[in-house]
Figure 1 (cartoon, helix red, strand yellow):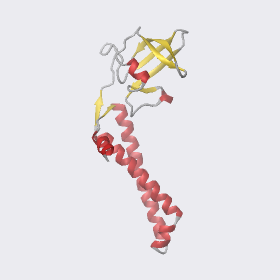
Figure 2 (spheres, rainbow, N blue to C red; figure 1 turned 90 degrees about the vertical axis):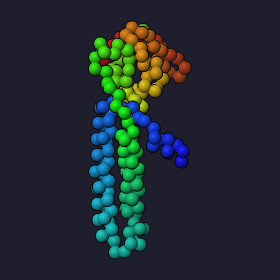
Figure 3 (cartoon, rainbow, N blue to C red; figure 1 turned 180 degrees about the vertical axis):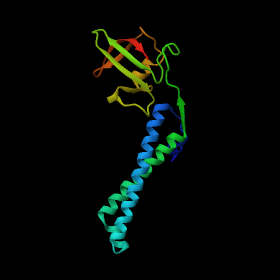
Figure 4 (tube, one colour; figure 1 turned 45 degrees about the horizontal axis):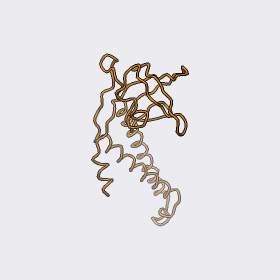
Length: 168
């Protein structure tokens, strides 16, 4: 119970675009909830008794999906209610160091380059190269400046040096 109460009071740091994505997801979940409720109503009118409805596997599955959707809505509403906006970096002149919202370009000693966007943990998506400021890579990049070297994980125990060659 304590962890639930703590999560309800936790402050979430999000960029404006992150809040926009979460608001879009919330709207989508609300539409899904309306569809599920309508589907349950149609199933209920098709059943001749409450007992048949309660035993109907389609109704049970739909109720389960509705509960899951409502929990997701509640969690997103809580996150948005307890979020604070973090300003994204506007230009390299304003923030010469890596911060949340920065797009960073790193170069290995072999010359290969990789680009990451530093985001909060709620916005992280490694498949889109959006890494959390709380991740090991994110923590090693926050506050760094162009020409600084950082050690990035390579395999299980190896770390390779990469030079920060761009911040935008």
